Amino acid sequence: MNSCKYLRLCGLFGIISFLSYVVAVVFSPLAYPGYNWMSQAVSDLSAATAPSRGLWDQLSCLYGKCGLVSIMAVSIYFAETRAGNRLTRIGVYVFAVMNWISAVGYDLFPLSEAGTGMKTFSDIMHVYVVTVAVVLTSIASLVLIIIGGFRSEKLKSLGIWAAIALTLMFVGAIGTNVVPQAYFGIVERFSVFSATGFNALLGYYLVRKKI
Image 1 (cartoon, rainbow, N blue to C red):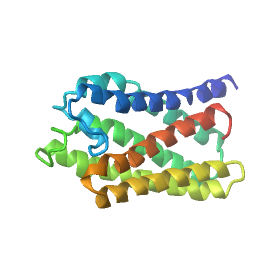
Image 2: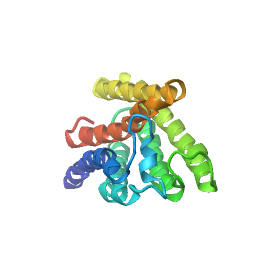
Image 3: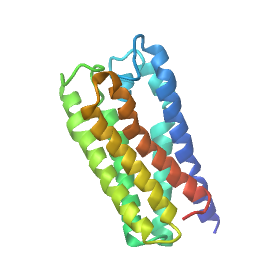
Image 4: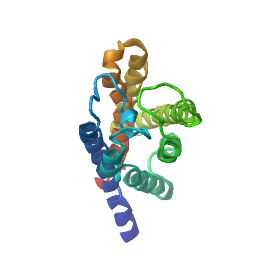
C-alpha cells in the first residue's frame, strides 16, 4: 500500500519536468542575441555552439531527469496494477521508450550550430535518426492510448487528451513544412510541447489516482 502511495507521488516529477522545460524555452533566448522564437526552432537554443547553451542546460536541468522518473513510475504502476487495458498499457510503455530515446539521443547528438543545416554527423543523427524515432514512437504510443482509452470508461478522458496531443503533434509536423519560415518556430512548438505536456498529464493522472 505504502509503496503504491510513494509511486503515485513520483508523478509530481512529470509536472516539474514540464515546468522546467517551459522555463528553459521562455528564458533561454535572453542569452541568445537575435533569437526569434517565431521563426527558429526550440532546439536552436541548445545547439552545441549556441550562446544560450549554458543557460539552457541550467534551466532545463530538471526536464529530462524528472520526466524519466515520472514516466517510469507511471509505467511501473500500469504494469503492477494492470490498470486500464492492454492497449493503454502498451501505449504507456511505448511512450516511456520515446522519453528515453529523446533524453539520451538529443544529449548524445546535439545540433552543432543553430539553424545552419546538416553540417556534421551529429546533426544528421539529431534530425534523421533521433527525431524520426521520437516522432514515430510518440505517434504509435498516442494512437494506442487513444484506442485503449476510449475502450475504458475510467480512462476515456486520458484517451481524449492523447487525441489532443496527437493533433497538436500533427499540426506542428505539417505546419513546419507549409508555413513561411518566419512562422516556423510557432508551429514547431505545437509538437515539442505536446509530448512534454502529455508526460506531465500522465504524472498528474498518477498523483490524482485517475488511473
